Length: 307
Length: 307
Image 1 (cartoon, rainbow over the protein chains, first blue to last red):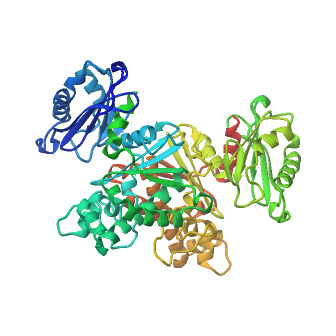
Image 2: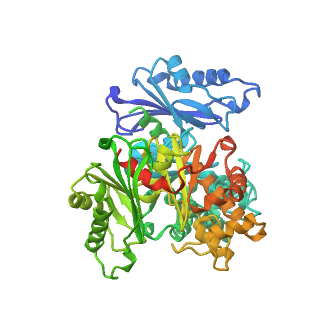
């Protein structure tokens, strides 16, 4: 909860996931005035034959419930959504396959009677970090979210870089391991970054059924295998970031998500691998920072969409 | 030589290299009205202590000589230059180290008494191919030039994508071979694309002191080793292009330079490697074409800078 701000400039921010959604009333300075953290919206439970209409109906229903208290305090709604989005149209969503070429922003605006902007959730996190966090409004900012997968977005001269079909910045699927026995990714590819640097990947590689936070706790207790896995994740990240810098020519990178709790184990290996793979004129010039927004980057970015 | 066009809309296009420059008078439709193919301008012969001023003086002198016949037929000059360029300022040039943070466009405009635009040569080739060649004015076009090295540029919504410091699209230095014994690149890195896919790299790998064109001739004569090297180059290109597509989300790629003579040996391996490394929603949707501009992409792009 932040300070109260003039009601007229506040906006509603929404972060839709595969099983829950989250919403907040956000002031113009990024202060969170009110927040609903977990509204159940389990799209994975929809019938396999569910249509886009059925998914939209669930979203509308859950959204109405979540944002009801704020409807008279905010005119506009910004939404982060896990899918490929081009001008408010969901082109496709790996988590919610029934949504395919659905004009989600328009449908929600009609149902909720106010302007709605929908963007990819990783792009929202990048925008949030750029505007309110460690991104410090850099000319170009690359932001990575290390969670179940690896999300990423690029803010360039204040705008989200979306690509021709809303699929830009698929950093999680950059190949970082070219050995024939590289880890197989859910996308079908081999050696994708998210198989090495996501919280899920670190937990899976550690085994014993523990989550990444517990792997981190064990690293802090001196567990060498745990430390090694974070260093491997950092090295994979550093290599991938260097490739992105060679293509995009940027100087600022921020990272959020569960993995940054282990920053002290990640960061040295990340810096080493990145510097070793940058071109000489870029060496020493790229700053990689941990997010300062905790788990609010996505929500604040969704808010920034409509500010 | 193309058709004559109204003089008022013609522009002067210049392509500056490390040892020679080339210039043309270009009509608005891309027709080359007149051309000077090789004016000696051997910057590598300048004293090691040469200053930026000395280099600029050589450029001005050679340019005056090259474009003298056209000065009364064209008002504007577009120049492709081998270096990192940001808003007409040469930030640095691997081939001409004395040029460091020199406002080349402004200096040349002052000396030649007309508007001058300077851009990176690989970006010019991309712009030329986008506007007049196989790029067909795609929403986003990635263009690669395979010659001594691997140059690349991105045209996005009609504009050159330059990056924060004029260093975007260093595709030639994307890492495509992550084995510890990968080839060492002139940039200091390991496994860079240009060590596998440039004409120089193919000739060097083949050995026997022959150039890439001769390696191609031998491939056509059934030389298995020659065929294999072009297939390797194609596979490296395909892998690198897939990485670029994952970051930039584009659908159109064009390739120019000496290597495209061997297109029939390059292209199948390129397609296979690219498709194998793309995300499923991108598979089958990226078109890679050989340039239709022969060796004029760079010059026509330099012309397009001032059209």
